Length: 240
Ligand code: GLP
Image 1 (cartoon, helix red, strand yellow):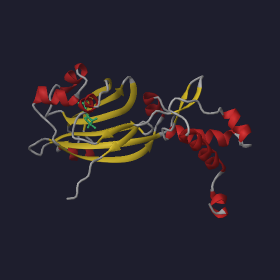
Image 2: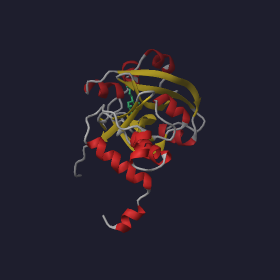
Image 3: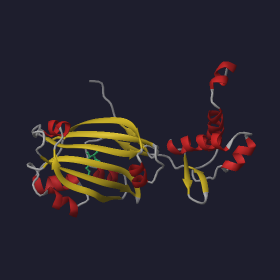
Image 4: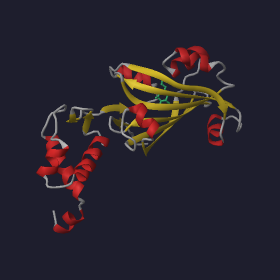
């Protein structure tokens, strides 16, 4: 490393690199030195150590356990991007999923939602917000919009079921077969942070899905806020 690049490296980043060396040498679940020890050992301030630790927690390299310390995190979950449901995909991978319904309302479509669902602006749509858990750990907050005219009575159905795609197939004979999926980053709002069990401002991966049935009719428009520290999304690509 040249002295010029070292000079540009902020102090907290040196602490972070030191911590990364420690992380790489230890198995998941091992404790890393406390804030106090690192502050003394590296002759730096507590704020600097905290910043390095916070970044590594946000990136999913470390986990904090209230009252017991900071530990090397388990490897992230590899989540293939596929045209399937959360429930089906998790069960194929051997995980147990649960769903908490946060909100299910009939509302008026805003312009972007209307366009995507092929309804008029202000037309009736359902907005369903759910917390998705994998092996009892909160993983994503998902907000889905569907046309109320196309799926009458959906709210009653979704209150009783944990899989939306199952409800669409069983009660409406609709199967999404194609979708456009987008991925963006965001920072957890206080509400998302509380629901997902992360700190406010933690990295979030926002997935958008606009799906269609075999006849090309739009089915759903979804925004999902996934914990950035727990997922690696995997897409298999093919040359066109
Ligand atoms: C994934 C997709 C969503 C879809 C959901 C359905 O999470 N990103 O677009 O609505 O699966 O999952 P389920 O059938 O488990 O409710």
